Length: 292
Image (tube, rainbow, N blue to C red; front, side):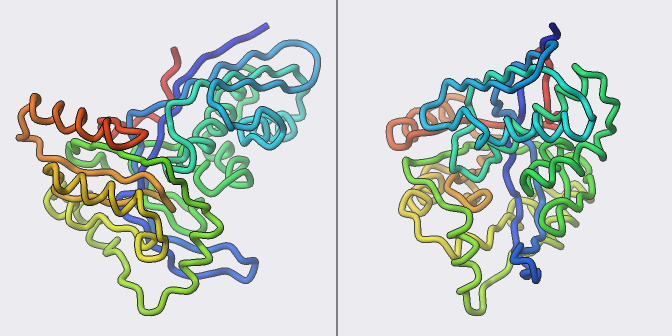
């Protein structure tokens, strides 16, 4: 029997724009993805035999073949032509329905971890080719760090590390359906697109002020979610320089000044914690996984 436990990082979208729709119905996008230090924990066990079992400590998360982590295990075994009995245990810290890639992060962790445990020998690029068939966020969550994404999210260009960002990520009780959000995008007339080019220039030159003011998300113009509106306003009220939704929602990240005293920052977290279901301080990270 072989076992591995790893922490799998969440992501935010510093910039997210939808640029078109392909004949197969999938939307094309431009986005700058960023890993952040909020993690799920995935424990993998591989032994002789066959079959997959999955357990999770978060209510409402499917523990069957509908879970992306389960599908990732199936996909890895199939691609490697291997047979094994796989047990997956998930401890969730990344909220569901948040636009932070929680399920995709778990799937990426399963692909990466089983590749190591079973000695499959796939490169990260090969794992990303497997992962994109599971979900558009999976390739980035295998790569991690900072990256420019095109296509449906699978065409990735690694970027330099961003300047220090002091983040607070907030989510209320409401979640957003990704398919519904894309349908709403299709109904927009004359939307204001985020300036992804300026975001890329800011990252490549280390221009922190330009990076912050270039944050944007087209989905904010399409969805109608009271928790998102309230979270963005409360973050700004409490001193965030910018507040932007991530993914198709419903989490919002605020960027706070590095000069804000720690006591005041802690007080901000305390206030938000009384108002929202999920509140976490976070920093960018360049590591998609931490083996523990």
